Figure 1: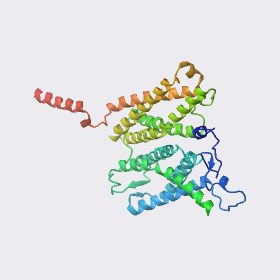
Figure 2: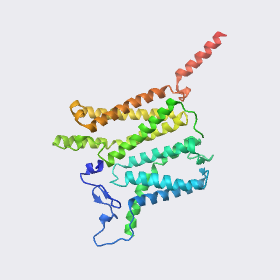
Figure 3: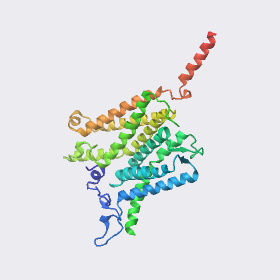
Length: 179
Length: 179
Protein backbone atom coordinates (compact mmCIF):
# COMPACT_ATOMS: atom_id res chain seq x y z
CA UNK A 1 0.00 0.00 0.00
CA UNK A 2 1.80 3.12 -1.15
CA UNK A 3 -0.44 5.76 -2.68
CA UNK A 4 0.08 9.12 -4.30
CA UNK A 5 2.30 10.84 -1.73
CA UNK A 6 4.85 8.05 -1.67
CA UNK A 7 4.90 7.80 -5.44
CA UNK A 8 5.21 11.55 -5.85
CA UNK A 9 8.12 11.98 -3.47
CA UNK A 10 9.77 8.72 -4.37
CA UNK A 11 10.25 7.75 -0.77
CA UNK A 12 8.33 5.97 1.91
CA UNK A 13 6.28 8.49 3.84
CA UNK A 14 4.10 5.98 5.63
CA UNK A 15 4.01 6.98 9.24
CA UNK A 16 3.31 4.86 12.24
CA UNK A 17 1.41 6.17 15.23
CA UNK A 18 2.93 9.35 16.54
CA UNK A 19 5.46 9.63 13.75
CA UNK A 20 4.75 12.24 11.18
CA UNK A 21 6.74 12.99 8.09
CA UNK A 22 6.39 15.83 5.65
CA UNK A 23 7.85 15.04 2.26
CA UNK A 24 10.16 12.49 3.75
CA UNK A 25 11.45 14.73 6.54
CA UNK A 26 10.23 14.29 10.10
CA UNK A 27 7.82 16.98 11.24
CA UNK A 28 9.11 19.21 13.99
CA UNK A 29 8.08 17.78 17.31
CA UNK A 30 7.60 14.22 16.13
CA UNK A 31 9.50 11.42 17.79
CA UNK A 32 11.78 11.00 14.79
CA UNK A 33 12.89 14.63 14.87
CA UNK A 34 14.08 14.59 18.47
CA UNK A 35 17.81 14.68 19.04
CA UNK A 36 19.07 11.38 20.37
CA UNK A 37 19.42 11.37 24.13
CA UNK A 38 16.57 13.79 24.81
CA UNK A 39 13.60 12.31 26.59
CA UNK A 40 10.03 13.49 26.49
CA UNK A 41 7.57 12.31 29.10
CA UNK A 42 4.57 13.83 27.36
CA UNK A 43 3.75 11.51 24.50
CA UNK A 44 0.77 12.34 22.36
CA UNK A 45 -0.21 10.15 19.43
CA UNK A 46 -1.68 11.81 16.38
CA UNK A 47 -4.96 9.80 16.51
CA UNK A 48 -5.44 10.89 20.12
CA UNK A 49 -4.52 14.47 19.24
CA UNK A 50 -7.09 14.41 16.39
CA UNK A 51 -9.76 13.04 18.74
CA UNK A 52 -9.07 15.64 21.45
CA UNK A 53 -8.91 18.50 18.94
CA UNK A 54 -12.19 17.46 17.33
CA UNK A 55 -13.83 17.26 20.77
CA UNK A 56 -12.57 20.77 21.54
CA UNK A 57 -13.96 22.07 18.23
CA UNK A 58 -17.27 20.34 19.05
CA UNK A 59 -17.47 21.95 22.47
CA UNK A 60 -16.75 25.40 20.96
CA UNK A 61 -19.36 24.95 18.21
CA UNK A 62 -22.05 23.71 20.61
CA UNK A 63 -21.31 26.52 23.09
CA UNK A 64 -21.55 29.10 20.32
CA UNK A 65 -24.80 27.59 19.01
CA UNK A 66 -26.22 27.55 22.53
CA UNK A 67 -25.20 31.19 23.14
CA UNK A 68 -26.68 32.35 19.83
CA UNK A 69 -29.68 30.00 20.19
CA UNK A 70 -29.17 28.61 16.69
CA UNK A 71 -30.55 25.13 17.39
CA UNK A 72 -31.88 23.20 20.33
CA UNK A 73 -31.68 19.53 21.22
CA UNK A 74 -34.64 17.31 22.07
CA UNK A 75 -32.72 15.80 25.00
CA UNK A 76 -29.77 17.16 27.04
CA UNK A 77 -27.81 13.97 26.26
CA UNK A 78 -27.84 14.61 22.49
CA UNK A 79 -25.20 17.39 22.46
CA UNK A 80 -22.85 15.08 24.36
CA UNK A 81 -23.48 12.29 21.86
CA UNK A 82 -22.95 14.76 19.02
CA UNK A 83 -19.63 15.98 20.42
CA UNK A 84 -18.32 12.51 21.28
CA UNK A 85 -19.61 10.51 18.35
CA UNK A 86 -19.90 12.90 15.41
CA UNK A 87 -17.18 15.45 16.20
CA UNK A 88 -14.72 13.18 18.03
CA UNK A 89 -15.05 9.74 16.49
CA UNK A 90 -16.45 10.34 13.01
CA UNK A 91 -15.12 13.72 11.86
CA UNK A 92 -12.01 13.89 14.05
CA UNK A 93 -10.67 10.36 14.31
CA UNK A 94 -12.19 8.59 11.29
CA UNK A 95 -11.99 11.36 8.69
CA UNK A 96 -9.34 13.65 10.19
CA UNK A 97 -6.76 11.12 11.21
CA UNK A 98 -7.53 8.37 8.69
CA UNK A 99 -7.51 10.69 5.67
CA UNK A 100 -5.18 13.48 6.70
CA UNK A 101 -3.18 12.28 9.65
CA UNK A 102 -1.12 9.43 8.26
CA UNK A 103 0.82 11.03 5.44
CA UNK A 104 2.12 14.30 4.13
CA UNK A 105 -0.68 16.84 3.92
CA UNK A 106 0.17 17.81 0.34
CA UNK A 107 -2.92 17.61 -1.84
CA UNK A 108 -5.11 15.91 0.74
CA UNK A 109 -6.96 19.03 1.98
CA UNK A 110 -9.78 18.82 -0.58
CA UNK A 111 -10.33 15.16 0.33
CA UNK A 112 -10.58 16.06 4.02
CA UNK A 113 -13.17 18.74 3.29
CA UNK A 114 -15.00 16.48 0.82
CA UNK A 115 -15.36 13.56 3.24
CA UNK A 116 -16.28 15.84 6.16
CA UNK A 117 -18.92 17.74 4.18
CA UNK A 118 -20.48 14.61 2.63
CA UNK A 119 -20.75 12.96 6.05
CA UNK A 120 -22.06 16.24 7.48
CA UNK A 121 -24.81 16.51 4.85
CA UNK A 122 -25.72 12.87 5.52
CA UNK A 123 -25.96 13.50 9.29
CA UNK A 124 -27.96 16.70 8.83
CA UNK A 125 -30.27 14.88 6.40
CA UNK A 126 -30.82 12.00 8.80
CA UNK A 127 -31.73 14.48 11.54
CA UNK A 128 -33.84 16.74 9.34
CA UNK A 129 -36.00 14.00 7.82
CA UNK A 130 -36.00 11.14 10.35
CA UNK A 131 -34.25 11.49 13.72
CA UNK A 132 -35.23 15.02 14.81
CA UNK A 133 -32.61 15.00 17.58
CA UNK A 134 -32.21 18.75 17.19
CA UNK A 135 -34.35 21.47 15.63
CA UNK A 136 -33.59 24.91 14.26
CA UNK A 137 -34.68 28.09 15.96
CA UNK A 138 -36.57 30.77 14.03
CA UNK A 139 -33.44 32.96 14.05
CA UNK A 140 -31.84 33.22 10.58
CA UNK A 141 -28.43 31.62 10.15
CA UNK A 142 -26.26 34.00 8.06
CA UNK A 143 -29.35 35.00 6.13
CA UNK A 144 -30.65 31.44 5.70
CA UNK A 145 -34.19 31.14 7.03
CA UNK A 146 -35.72 27.80 6.04
CA UNK A 147 -34.95 24.79 8.22
CA UNK A 148 -34.02 22.56 5.24
CA UNK A 149 -31.60 25.20 3.91
CA UNK A 150 -30.02 25.64 7.34
CA UNK A 151 -29.45 21.88 7.53
CA UNK A 152 -27.84 21.87 4.07
CA UNK A 153 -25.67 24.88 4.89
CA UNK A 154 -24.48 23.44 8.19
CA UNK A 155 -23.93 20.08 6.46
CA UNK A 156 -21.43 21.69 4.09
CA UNK A 157 -19.66 23.54 6.92
CA UNK A 158 -18.99 20.15 8.58
CA UNK A 159 -16.23 19.90 5.97
CA UNK A 160 -14.13 22.36 7.96
CA UNK A 161 -14.10 20.11 11.04
CA UNK A 162 -11.63 17.43 9.82
CA UNK A 163 -9.58 20.11 8.08
CA UNK A 164 -9.19 22.18 11.26
CA UNK A 165 -8.79 19.02 13.32
CA UNK A 166 -5.74 17.82 11.39
CA UNK A 167 -4.08 21.23 11.31
CA UNK A 168 -4.66 21.89 15.02
CA UNK A 169 -3.76 18.32 16.03
CA UNK A 170 -0.40 18.58 14.28
CA UNK A 171 0.16 21.94 15.96
CA UNK A 172 -0.83 20.42 19.31
CA UNK A 173 1.68 17.60 18.84
CA UNK A 174 4.44 20.02 18.00
CA UNK A 175 3.64 22.13 21.06
CA UNK A 176 3.22 19.12 23.38
CA UNK A 177 6.76 17.95 22.58
CA UNK A 178 8.23 21.43 22.90
CA UNK A 179 6.66 21.76 26.37
CA UNK B 1 -39.50 18.60 8.91
CA UNK B 2 -40.49 14.98 8.32
CA UNK B 3 -39.46 13.12 5.17
CA UNK B 4 -42.02 13.83 2.43
CA UNK B 5 -43.27 11.10 0.12
CA UNK B 6 -40.57 10.37 -2.41
CA UNK B 7 -41.22 8.41 -5.60
CA UNK B 8 -39.18 5.27 -6.32
CA UNK B 9 -37.46 7.01 -9.25
CA UNK B 10 -36.46 9.94 -7.04
CA UNK B 11 -35.19 7.55 -4.37
CA UNK B 12 -33.04 5.85 -6.99
CA UNK B 13 -31.83 9.21 -8.21
CA UNK B 14 -31.00 10.36 -4.66
CA UNK B 15 -29.17 7.08 -4.03
CA UNK B 16 -27.20 7.54 -7.25
CA UNK B 17 -26.19 11.04 -6.18
CA UNK B 18 -25.34 9.99 -2.63
CA UNK B 19 -23.51 6.76 -3.43
CA UNK B 20 -22.08 7.42 -6.89
CA UNK B 21 -21.57 11.17 -6.86
CA UNK B 22 -20.48 11.55 -3.24
CA UNK B 23 -19.57 8.27 -1.53
CA UNK B 24 -17.56 6.66 -4.32
CA UNK B 25 -15.81 9.91 -5.19
CA UNK B 26 -14.66 10.25 -1.55
CA UNK B 27 -13.65 6.57 -1.44
CA UNK B 28 -11.69 6.93 -4.69
CA UNK B 29 -9.61 9.84 -3.39
CA UNK B 30 -8.97 8.27 -0.02
CA UNK B 31 -7.72 5.18 -1.88
CA UNK B 32 -5.70 7.36 -4.25
CA UNK B 33 -3.79 8.98 -1.39
CA UNK B 34 -3.40 5.91 0.80
CA UNK B 35 -3.13 2.87 -1.48
CA UNK B 36 -2.20 1.61 -4.92
CA UNK B 37 -5.72 0.50 -5.78
CA UNK B 38 -6.53 3.35 -8.13
CA UNK B 39 -3.18 3.55 -9.91
CA UNK B 40 -2.71 1.98 -13.35
CA UNK B 41 -0.02 -0.67 -13.75
CA UNK B 42 2.19 1.40 -16.04
CA UNK B 43 2.87 3.83 -13.18
CA UNK B 44 4.66 1.01 -11.31
CA UNK B 45 6.57 -0.39 -14.26
CA UNK B 46 8.87 2.48 -15.10
CA UNK B 47 10.79 0.62 -17.77
CA UNK B 48 11.91 3.49 -20.00
CA UNK B 49 12.36 7.30 -19.83
CA UNK B 50 9.23 7.68 -21.98
CA UNK B 51 7.13 5.73 -19.44
CA UNK B 52 8.64 7.73 -16.58
CA UNK B 53 7.67 10.94 -18.34
CA UNK B 54 4.15 9.68 -19.04
CA UNK B 55 3.74 8.48 -15.45
CA UNK B 56 4.87 11.87 -14.11
CA UNK B 57 2.44 13.72 -16.38
CA UNK B 58 -0.36 11.26 -15.49
CA UNK B 59 0.19 11.59 -11.73
CA UNK B 60 0.40 15.37 -11.97
CA UNK B 61 -2.83 15.43 -13.97
CA UNK B 62 -4.65 13.09 -11.57
CA UNK B 63 -3.51 15.00 -8.50
CA UNK B 64 -5.22 18.14 -9.84
CA UNK B 65 -8.65 16.50 -9.61
CA UNK B 66 -9.45 16.42 -5.84
CA UNK B 67 -10.52 20.07 -5.64
CA UNK B 68 -12.81 19.70 -8.66
CA UNK B 69 -14.17 16.42 -7.31
CA UNK B 70 -14.85 18.13 -3.97
CA UNK B 71 -17.28 20.36 -5.87
CA UNK B 72 -18.94 17.33 -7.48
CA UNK B 73 -19.17 15.39 -4.21
CA UNK B 74 -20.67 18.28 -2.22
CA UNK B 75 -23.20 19.33 -4.90
CA UNK B 76 -24.19 15.66 -5.40
CA UNK B 77 -24.75 15.24 -1.66
CA UNK B 78 -26.85 18.43 -1.64
CA UNK B 79 -28.86 17.20 -4.63
CA UNK B 80 -29.57 13.91 -2.82
CA UNK B 81 -30.46 15.82 0.36
CA UNK B 82 -32.93 18.11 -1.41
CA UNK B 83 -34.38 15.25 -3.48
CA UNK B 84 -35.22 13.38 -0.28
CA UNK B 85 -36.75 16.61 1.03
CA UNK B 86 -38.63 17.07 -2.29
CA UNK B 87 -37.34 20.63 -2.54
CA UNK B 88 -36.89 22.55 -5.81
CA UNK B 89 -33.21 23.09 -5.02
CA UNK B 90 -32.67 19.40 -5.86
CA UNK B 91 -32.93 20.33 -9.53
CA UNK B 92 -30.46 23.19 -9.17
CA UNK B 93 -27.82 21.17 -7.31
CA UNK B 94 -28.51 18.07 -9.39
CA UNK B 95 -27.90 19.90 -12.67
CA UNK B 96 -24.78 21.58 -11.28
CA UNK B 97 -23.40 18.25 -10.01
CA UNK B 98 -24.25 16.37 -13.21
CA UNK B 99 -22.76 19.09 -15.40
CA UNK B 100 -19.56 19.13 -13.36
CA UNK B 101 -19.36 15.32 -13.41
CA UNK B 102 -19.80 15.21 -17.19
CA UNK B 103 -17.18 17.93 -17.63
CA UNK B 104 -14.64 16.05 -15.50
CA UNK B 105 -15.38 12.80 -17.32
CA UNK B 106 -14.76 14.45 -20.70
CA UNK B 107 -11.47 15.97 -19.51
CA UNK B 108 -10.29 12.59 -18.22
CA UNK B 109 -11.36 10.77 -21.39
CA UNK B 110 -9.69 13.43 -23.53
CA UNK B 111 -6.42 13.13 -21.59
CA UNK B 112 -6.41 9.34 -21.78
CA UNK B 113 -7.20 9.31 -25.51
CA UNK B 114 -4.57 11.93 -26.37
CA UNK B 115 -1.87 10.07 -24.44
CA UNK B 116 -2.71 6.67 -25.92
CA UNK B 117 -3.88 5.24 -22.61
CA UNK B 118 -7.13 4.03 -24.17
CA UNK B 119 -5.36 2.30 -27.04
CA UNK B 120 -6.69 -1.30 -27.08
CA UNK B 121 -3.22 -2.80 -26.55
CA UNK B 122 -2.62 -0.66 -23.45
CA UNK B 123 -6.15 -0.97 -22.13
CA UNK B 124 -6.36 -4.78 -22.35
CA UNK B 125 -3.26 -5.45 -20.26
CA UNK B 126 -3.78 -2.78 -17.56
CA UNK B 127 -6.49 -3.44 -14.95
CA UNK B 128 -6.03 0.06 -13.48
CA UNK B 129 -6.80 1.67 -16.83
CA UNK B 130 -9.79 -0.63 -17.33
CA UNK B 131 -11.14 0.57 -13.98
CA UNK B 132 -10.54 4.15 -15.04
CA UNK B 133 -12.38 3.57 -18.33
CA UNK B 134 -15.28 2.09 -16.37
CA UNK B 135 -15.33 5.12 -14.06
CA UNK B 136 -15.23 7.51 -17.05
CA UNK B 137 -18.13 5.75 -18.79
CA UNK B 138 -20.16 5.54 -15.56
CA UNK B 139 -19.64 9.26 -14.88
CA UNK B 140 -20.68 10.18 -18.40
CA UNK B 141 -23.74 7.92 -18.51
CA UNK B 142 -24.76 8.98 -14.98
CA UNK B 143 -24.37 12.68 -15.80
CA UNK B 144 -26.41 12.44 -19.02
CA UNK B 145 -29.14 10.36 -17.38
CA UNK B 146 -29.30 12.75 -14.44
CA UNK B 147 -29.52 15.88 -16.61
CA UNK B 148 -32.16 14.25 -18.81
CA UNK B 149 -34.26 13.27 -15.78
CA UNK B 150 -33.93 16.59 -13.93
CA UNK B 151 -34.73 18.57 -17.08
CA UNK B 152 -38.37 17.51 -16.90
CA UNK B 153 -38.56 16.90 -13.16
CA UNK B 154 -41.79 18.07 -11.47
CA UNK B 155 -39.73 19.99 -8.91
CA UNK B 156 -38.39 22.25 -11.60
CA UNK B 157 -40.09 25.61 -11.16
CA UNK B 158 -42.64 26.55 -13.80
CA UNK B 159 -41.14 30.02 -14.30
CA UNK B 160 -37.88 28.33 -15.33
CA UNK B 161 -39.72 26.46 -18.06
CA UNK B 162 -41.24 28.89 -20.57
CA UNK B 163 -42.73 25.97 -22.51
CA UNK B 164 -44.89 25.10 -19.50
CA UNK B 165 -46.07 28.68 -19.11
CA UNK B 166 -46.86 28.75 -22.81
CA UNK B 167 -48.78 25.48 -22.53
CA UNK B 168 -50.68 26.89 -19.58
CA UNK B 169 -51.53 30.10 -21.44
CA UNK B 170 -52.62 28.15 -24.50
CA UNK B 171 -54.73 25.91 -22.31
CA UNK B 172 -56.50 28.96 -20.82
CA UNK B 173 -57.01 30.46 -24.30
CA UNK B 174 -58.44 27.21 -25.60
CA UNK B 175 -60.76 26.94 -22.61
CA UNK B 176 -61.96 30.50 -23.12
CA UNK B 177 -62.44 29.85 -26.85
CA UNK B 178 -64.49 26.79 -26.08
CA UNK B 179 -67.01 28.71 -23.96
